[in-house]
Image (cartoon, rainbow, N blue to C red; front, side, top):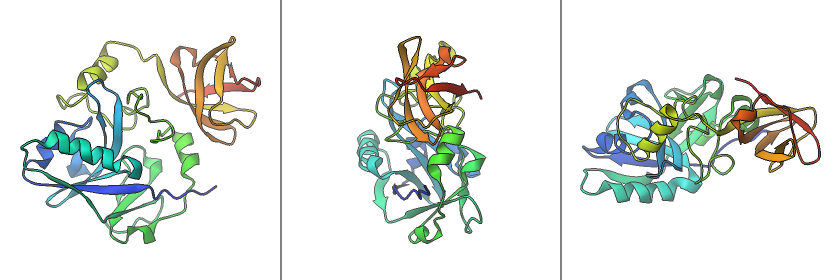
Length: 252
């Protein structure tokens, strides 16, 4: 099934403090904007996911390309943190187009993975949208998405944000940084997002078992492959679903 993604909204930040303001809040280094899009996240102080988004460079500020269902949450949270900073934050009438080939002039590459193509921003951007099977691409390249893999219980390192260039460990403090840094440097991840394959069709929501014990669940499927959240110590084992379909984890 071809599934164009048009579920995005765009926020705009302007003002003399907007770069410093966002740098102190989000997981990635905003100074990377001079290289193109920056993929990042806003976290709770406990290090859990609030929203993921792309920060888009513009001449006199920056924009944020975020899932439409998270736009109000993100806008409200940013306004809470704004305090006396010289920053104006608002939703703007800008559309997002996505594609894999023949990018329009001004399109920017998706920083998460080179196979994810380009993103383009303008008031009439949707006319450039290309039909792409995004579910297949997400499963192929282990790309989490809000509403499927990313929830308010997610930790971004478990969801692969380091591999997806969505977190920077040298930028200094940001909200949730202490927990994220501790997970990176002081512990081994116990759970994580992986790609699995089976010889049979598998379904969203199915539990995965090892020796009769539940060790994870299937989150997004595409045919006989899927994204699953599992205990990583079992990544070399052959798993099974409740109805005995055999499943293996695809190694990096």
